[in-house]
Image (tube, rainbow, N blue to C red; front, side, top):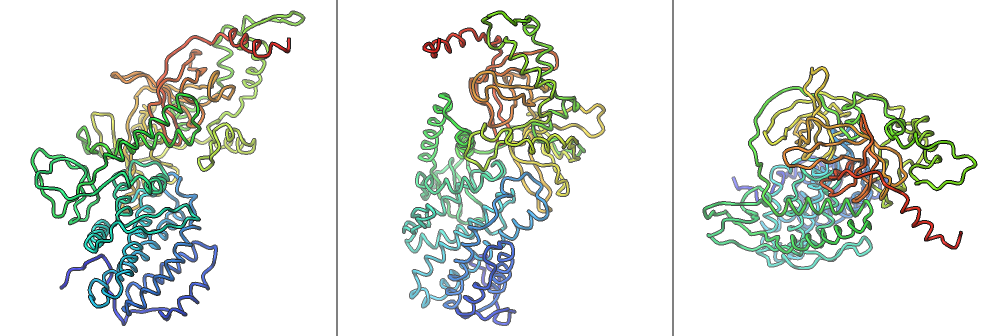
Length: 606
């Protein structure tokens, strides 16, 4: 039996087909689809593509049919709901069904174009007459395969078997035809520039090298769009027999590009060296620019998030991803809490949160502020009676006991335009008083402070995501001995269960409350945060809500027993939900100089 050239289903002229495959019939069928109903249109399109891809008819007819259907698939792609792409996992059944439909839509469309490629390759006479069609069918096949792969990566699913085999085969055909670098014009109205098969291929290789399991929620698509320009900084070339180290893509196997290191020369079936040197240099430059802006206090949240993503990509693309320590397989039940806010509640045993009251108790200066009625007095602003009145009012009201950052990640606005946006939202948050603790299974551990846990797909309240703060304790421990960590990678298993890797930050994390008194977020409210103590050379740090504070911000910090002041130094890590800063403890600000500065600026008013 002849080996399949590409992964396409067998076809038969006796297969069931629900409609006529003539051009007029297909146009009428497309016109009858519900215009703005993605789910309904997608389901019908998937069913039709499934039939067409198993029905044997003339390649010239298939070319016309796929041309018409591809236009409609492109329109569906533009109206595809994106509100699930930033969700935590496990997804609900409805969300997962929508993602599965989208994957099937792009896979079916890609198969239709791969059938055209296969049929033309098998028929030399037709190929001679349709070289241009072959070229565009390869482009379309790679395009829809890429969209399907992105949809899988967005929910942390690995590629289907045969995906990379087909990418490599399409690249080889294009290379043999000499059409790798022919420019393909994009849609200027949608901001799409010209590209080529070579660029399409390198983009998807770079996305695979980015390691989807370590991307933040929704980042797979963001990274792919960014690669439209970045792929031009890379190159593919043949390798010789002395190769030992580099990024290699072997066109003869069903695997993506990989970092390869060996003490001895190694050979490949059809190897290509993927040179990333130019891209890494470009990325270093972009990171430097964003770092300078951050130090100058000019970065909004969007820029800080971009900087963090660039740093993670630079690390992943620049080094091989090997585990530094051996993991030991185990199987024990653990309790899991996810999210900075919930972890704070769990670590503090859900103690009532009223840091304004604690600040008044711990700060001795407030007792020195007596009755100043009828007396003209200049005092430091932080020690003024009216400032005390404000804090007392907050303490009495216990303003927003469940306060957390409400930054809207889909908005381009900076944090303070979204925090405390509506009192209705805040009341709803306060009403949710149940601490979410879910059962999971720890499946391995390592001496380096890492572990892998598996969460059942039915545990929708687990709310797992890369970059989320978590607290983990052995099931049955009384009281629970919580370890505080961060989710570093995540994969959806074949049965839709979720496996994630957790880096443990501390066994003795301390719950604190922080508010800014100078710098980003000044005059805001107290936020639930976590203090990570110094350990084995790692500096002490604080985990604070994302989008609120920045470098050099000075925080008022309420612990369980005292009031401290921290100046935020280096940004050690961040995600969509938290920032981790190192800090130095400082004395309470003396506002006398600040008051003088205000008088100088307003001299004319005196």
